[in-house]
Image (tube, rainbow, N blue to C red; front, side, top):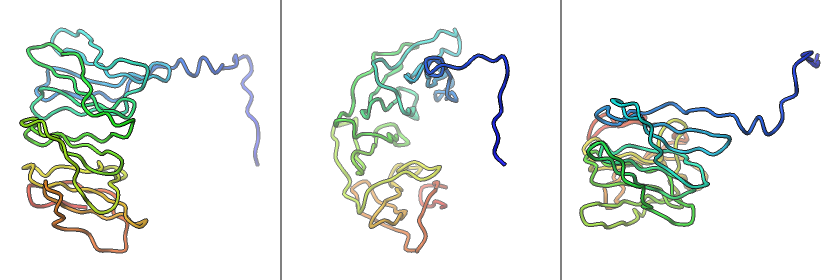
Length: 212
């Protein structure tokens, strides 16, 4: 039987008070442990911050009036990539100092899911359902032509590099069905699930094996 609970003497909560609630998402250590980074939700606007592990000083990474959705550190700890307003930004960290973040990929709010190669020399991301790879050595960016649209799993990223960086695993949506595939960095599909089940989650074990 449904009922109503009334708490006497407690003032009403206003919408402004709800929107002013602040909280911190789970923090992430930088490789090497010199920086602790986290997302800070300040009344509905989420920004990216870093804390120096030695001095305790706090540094804002992002700026602007749009929220940061996610971020990921390069494995070598030299920089991080974050998604803000559907664009991808890069912030470099060297000699204990943060450089001003720069716009890395901008396509009208269609970019998300950045992922670093294990050697930090390439950054992949998803743009409008396609995986794009950017190589820092020659500053080139190109799309991998895969079947369907790349989609994230329930607890897995949209795509992930193998442990040696030579392959990519991705979940694709094609004709209403989710499959897991493995492709090389040229976009050639080397393996794909062929079951009636919708694939959801996966993780690389080593350079040639994954479980799903």
